[in-house]
Length: 190
Image 1 (cartoon, rainbow, N blue to C red):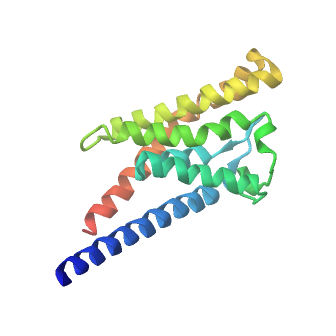
Image 2: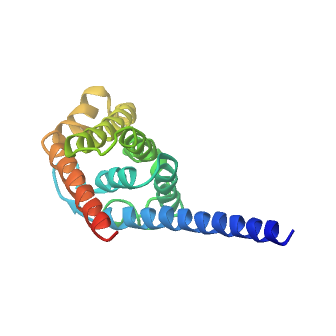
């Protein structure tokens, strides 16, 4: 009986450590997304942010479920009025703003990136970029769809997609490069 109780205790401690590690990863990812959101490049008519880069990196680094939860926590923080949105702004009513589709797509995009990424064994730079591109498609589909309710489809494309077509390949390259660097550092420390 003593052996069984010790074995049970070890299993419970392993599960507690695993849960604590998962929670730490999720909250750290949410915090990192808040930090990345502070950076904004003033473009006309819509500024460019690095939120999507953070969302895609979270997808590459975490499992699909953890990635979606981490980004959802970020949106919950925004809903509570914390200054985590683009440029450190606060908007508890972000879900009724014209950019709501872009923000609401983030958990889905993180999930899609993570889900696709985990289908590859030893993903190359190109495959990593493909996963980030898939996340970008999710963001643009949702974002432009919601934006079209506010301004019409043509204007939504003009202001929500067209200005960013030249920038998104750079972001995808940046995300893939940063992931590969993180992965290199992580593997060299083992």
